[in-house]
Image: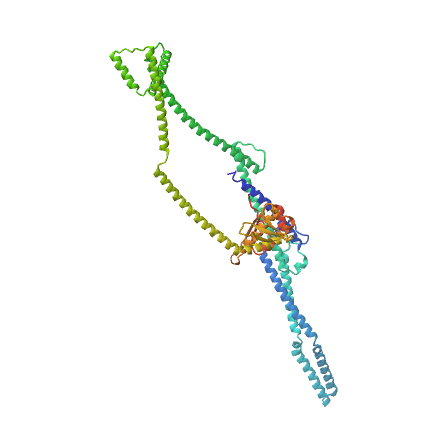
Length: 576
C-alpha cells in the first residue's frame, strides 16, 4: 500500500507547491487591491475586520444613504427654487407699509378735519388702509410663500439628518478599516465591491490553507505508515524525505519478492528432487532385488567363490556369443546348412568313412571356390535385382502420375482464377485511385502549395503529382523554376516535414464535412524547423486556431515559450 502511495505523495508535494504559489499570489493581489482604497495599504490585523463586515447591512446602509441623499438633493433643489421665486417678487414686501401709511394719513385727516367732508374722506382712506393691512395679513403671506418655504426647509433639515444618520451607520460598519474620509462622506456600491473582493481573496487563501493542512495530515499519515512498515521490516533509514523512504521500502519489497520467488523456485525444485529421489530409491530397491536374484542364481553355478563363478559365466557368455556369430555366418554362407547337417548326420549313422587325402582336399577346395564364386555372382545378381525392385517400387505408378497431373491441373486452374481475381481487384483499385486523384488531388495539392509557400516565404510554391501514375510528388523551387522530387536526399528533413504538414492541413481542410471544422493534432512537427519558417508556421497555426481546434504536443519548453509569444493557449501538462 505504501509503495502504491508513492505517486500520491509526489502529487501531494506538487499540490503543496502549487498551493503555496497560489497563496503568495492571492496575498500579493490582496495587498495590491487594498492599497487602492485603504490608507496605509494592507495590514494583517485588517483580516478580522474585513471578515466582520456585515455585507447585507453594508449594502442596506449604502442603499439607504443613496436614497436619503437623493431625497435631500431633491428637497434642497425644491427649497432653493422657492427662495429664488420669493426673491423675484419684491412688491409684496411694500404692501404692509403702504397700507399702514394710508391708515395713518386717514386717521390724521379725520382728526384734523373732523366731521367735514375732508374728514370723511380721511376716514375712508384710514378704513381703506386698514382693509389693505387685513387683506395682506389674510392673503398676502400665502401668496409670497413664506409659510411653504418654512415647511420645505423643515423637510430639508429632516432629509439632511437622515443622510447624516445613514452615513454614521456606514462609518460604524467600517470603523476598523482605514477608508479615506472622502469615500466615507459619500459612500457608494464600490465600497461593497472592494470589501467583497478582499473577502474573496481571504476566502481563497483560507481554502488553500485548509487544503494544505489536509495534504499535510495525509502526508503525515503516509509518513507514519511508512515508518511503521520500515520498523516492522527491520529496515533502517537516515533520510527524512518520505519519498526516499518509500524508495527504500520499495527496493526492500522488490528484494523480498525476489527472495520469495527464489524460495518458491527452490521449493518447486525441491519437490522435483524429492520425486527424483523417490524414483531413485525405487530403482535402487529394484536393483537390489535383481542383484540378490542374480547372486542366488550365481550360487547355483560351479566354482570356488562368487568371483570365479562370475568370471566363468562371462566366459561362457562370450563363447555362446561367438557360437551364435559363427552359426549366423555359416547360415549366411551356406543357406542349405540344415541340409548339410542332415547329410552329415546320415553319414555318421551309416558309419561311412571320410577319406580326405591331399588330392581330394585340393579338389574339394577347388569345388568350394567355384561354388563360392557362383554364390557371389548369384548374390550380386540378387542384390542388383533387389535394388532394381526397390527403385521400381519407389517409382510412382501411372495412375498415381495421372492423379498428380489432375491435381496440378486443378491447382493451376485455382491459381489462374485467383490471379484473374487479383488482377481485377488491382484494376479496380487503380481506377478508384485515378478517380480519387482526379477529384481530390488537384484541390489538395493546390491548397498544400499555398500553405507551403506561406511557410517557406515563397521559396517552394507548388506541389505536383508525378506523371504516368508514378508514385511520389514534385515540389517547385520558385527562384529557379526547378521541380525537385519530394524524398529524403533531395530535400532537408525540415523541408520534408513542412511539406508533410502542408499536405495534412490541405487534406484536413478538403475533407471537412459540411463546413464542420475538424480538430487538428500536431505532435512535435516544428522541432526541426529554422527560425524564419518556424515563425511563419506559428503564424499559420494561429490563423488556423481561429477556425478549428488545434492540439499541439511537445516536450520542449523553448517551443512552449515560442508559442506563448505568438498566441494564447491552454496548457495541459501530461503526467508520465
